Every structure is written in structure tokens, then in C-alpha cells.
Length: 431
Image (cartoon, rainbow, N blue to C red; front, side, top):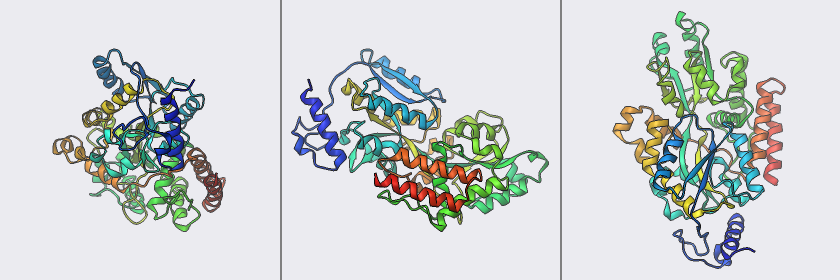
């Protein structure tokens, strides 16, 4: 038998997905969101936190702090694969079976619309989180049709990592701001004896979510768009072709090594740290790990280059959301507040180089002294372009990956790949 709370949850989710007012559901009181009939959060006890594998070793210590303070409301960490596509699939499977095994979900920022529209996550009480202290583009990733369905945990903007020692030796004083400058710098560096065997550039070009990110960045950095704000695809354009051609031509001319089309984040990081790459596109987490490597004092970061000037990163990061079928939602809400507060964000910045959602941390002089890339990262996030915010995100990202990889491997021309991608994205948008 369904309780009044359960019926309210279901009604709220359905109407929110339809973009309607919640007053039709009847009210269980104001939860602080300022909207009558919003979800009530009840139940206390053990919960789970579900995220990709923690390669930084910082998540469990933070959970231990919570568990010490809340012995009757302990959080168990469920680690999913490092691959984002595999994480998403397991979370969807859990939601579709209406299992309560997953409580708090760490969602890739671009998944919020999909999970909210399918009623896999609960609407959150917006006023109970300090969203006004966070960067606006980051907060926007946690909303669906104007309502708060998640809370930012960390943000992410792509950075260009580069070898300062080798550029200096080649007489180059500034990092490149365009793709042409990057290739020119690489040609000069390769003439150095110290650069024997080094490759120019790599990102994340294996056929997975990272390829969608890198493709989107290339298109946006060439003046194109993947989809407009309403989700309408727009990739069959000269600008999109220039972006895709940068990636395809870079593989052909050796700017990107052959193995570069197999790289995910960790592959590129390890190649850069071991001295095999001059330039690397990756996320901020690489900084703290590279500082412990043999190139610790030999690298720096810059904004991503583009066609005619600084490029645009895809807006990354993760948001915490609450599974619609979870138990102990009162505990879950309190845990989400703890895990995403400014103090926790500062800890994750210091210990794992996670990009914080809070604006103040980017302007902290003491932190900038310790993490000199913070101003660059803030610029990257503020200039970032979101990946398509669409309900059928799984279909969209699959189409992008399929066609981009076909162009990278030479089985299709850039022009044909983009035409086919446009058709596939239109079909997804029509569903």
C-alpha cells in the first residue's frame, strides 16, 4: 500500500518532469524550497553513496568523518567502474528496477536532465543549500526545468597541461592560445635532443564519454555548437567541421600519437607524467598527481587553445542527487549538505584537486599560492559550454562517439561523419 508521502513523491516527480506546478499534488508542507507540495524527506538510518571508483583516495576519509559523527546513520561507499558510461548504465539499471540499494548518486553534471525527466531522482529543497555562493554555470547543471534536482559536488573545466622546461628550452615563453601555435611549438620542441620520442598532444579520444567531451570542445573552440539551448542539433556546419578536422588531421599528421585514440583520462595522465607528451588536455585532478611525479616542477597549466584564440572547455563536474527509491531520505539530505558544503569542497580541493563549486575558493590568495592553476580553472569554467542538456542523453552521446570515432579512424570523412551525426541527433531530439 502506498503512503501519502510516496504518492506525493510520485506526483511531484511526474509534474516536475512535465514542467507543471506542484499545487495539484496537494501539500505535505513547505520543505524550505518555497513550493507547496514539494517532496518531504523522511527516514533516518544507513545509506549508500554511489560514485565512480575513487582514484584519489580522498572520498572514504570524508565518509569516515561523517560516520564517526553519525554512528546510527552510516554511509557505505559503493564504487562503480571508472568509465562514465558504465557508471551511468549501472545507476539506470538500479533506478529501473526501483531498487533502494543506491541512495545518494554522484552524477556526471550532464546527466541531471535525463535522470530528473525519468523520475529516477527526487527534487531537492533548493533553499537548504548555499547555491548563491556557487558559480552560476555550475549551479545550472543541477537544475531541470527550473527546479533543483541535484546539488553541485565539484565542477570541472578542461585545462591544457604543458611542459614548461621544454618550451623554455625551445625559446617559447608563453603557452599556445591557438591550435596552430600548439603545433608550431611542438615542431620546435621536437628538434631538441631532450625531446627525443616525445609526442605533441593528447586528450581523451577512446570511444566513451570522454570522446563526446573532446569533440564538443573542438567544435565549440572553432565557433560551432553541438546543440542549441533547446537541444536542437547543429553539427552539420563549416564550424563543426573545422573542429572535427583539428582532431582528425592531428591524428593523421602525428600531432596526436596513434595510441592517442585509445586514451581515457588516466592513460593521458600517465603518458604526460612519464615524459611522453608535450601537451595534454585533461581535468584539474591531474595537477595534484603530476606534482608527485618526475615532472613535478616542469609543467604548468593554461586555457585550452582554439582555432583563433583560447578555446572553450566542456563543462564537467559531478552533482549529488537522491535516488527516488531510496530509504532514509532525511539522513541522505543531511549527508548531501555535509558532503557539498564549502569546508568539504576546500578539503577535496586540497587533497584531490577537485574543482570546487564555490566562487570564493578560486579567489583565496593562500589557495592560489598553493594551487596556481585556480585562476585558469575559474576562467575555464566560466567560459565552458555544457554538453547537450537533453533527456535522451544516452542516445545523443552514443551517436557523437560513434561518428567522431569513425572520422578519427578514417572509416568516414569528417563531412560524412557530421552529416550522419546530425541525422542521428535529430532522431534522438524527436523522441
